[in-house]
Image 1 (cartoon, rainbow, N blue to C red):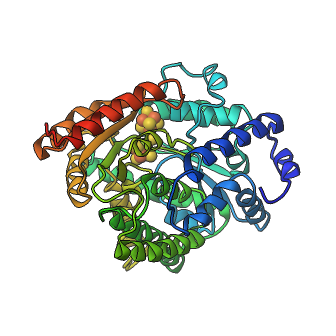
Image 2 (image 1 turned 30 degrees about the vertical axis):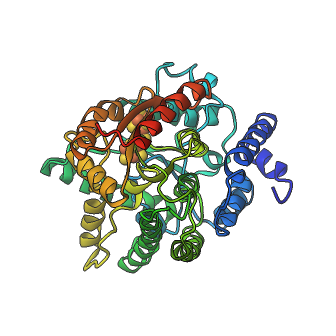
Image 3 (image 1 turned 45 degrees about the vertical axis):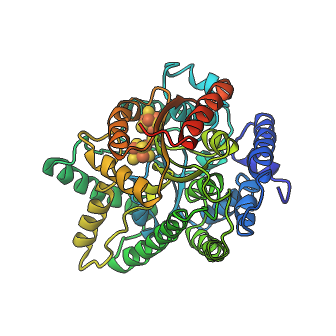
Length: 431
Ligand code: BJ8
């Protein structure tokens, strides 16, 4: 950290002692997992800096934005339209957490067998560890999986009524789409009344450009990873796909594009994160929130490169651009609703589009193997693993199914399984 932020954290009613412990663990983990990587692009220095200041400088910026009257909107899902938040000059912040600190606190309210992501955001709040939650004016939930839906009822109590829940249909039927369009409009009204600002066509066009530019930068990064060798490690790419939920959008886009310029050069010179021909892995499944770097660290530590994430912290977040050629506000709302309905989350039934996405992605990235990652007790993704395996089998791409949580207890066991999988790929074994 560049300075002492304790006064700011106290002002946000955080538990300074516990938070200090968390920062210590985070710093060590980052050093061991990230800074120990060899041959990283220079452009990653910016993202290293962001992480070193993730509870410092960025929070200071948000507190300053709040002082200027901007509203801080927390989210948990890539279904929440960021364009609408930016159109009322709001700040959009992802609140998902990827560490199991605070899980004991969370288990006083919710069952043990709840997914680690839910336990984490609840645990971070209860243990006074998350400055982002503390700065929010509104927290937007969604009716996706059962765990989240029910957790938001309790989270509303824990945050003194800050929750607002968007009703997301379970199917992409015409009725489901109509419901979602109404929800997008209802959310825009909520934002207008919260901020006291009107969403105009002009504001919405500006906001849509900002978000689309961010998606384009991430698409560019994703394309660069199709090269062999990939010019960037999966760990570094994962980090960028995590930071996108916290950083200032304009600055983030500029920095990702700068990095991609450098990666273009690396591709030309054949420089990569690992040597040419090392196994290329596509990860697919539940999202990995900061600082959940477990699977990437194990897989890349075993000599493979992760070349893509079919995940909301990854492709699902940026795959579709918004058609921002709006003719009216009504048209804009419709186009926004349509764009978000293209996100293929396992909470929908059926969800065959996700299978096509995986097939396309595995082909484009020239994946030698697919690892299906589900957070333990994440029923939607655990269930869909069966169908994803069928896609992998049809493509003759080796498949490994992993279910894990945020603890480090199964690291040894996971490493053994991943190593055996990579060995099988190395021997050219196809299922
Ligand atoms: S669009 S994936 S961000 S809902 S891991 S809490 S699903 S039990 S996070 Fe998600 Fe939106 Fe879908 Fe994406 Fe439930 Fe699974 Fe836990 Fe999850």
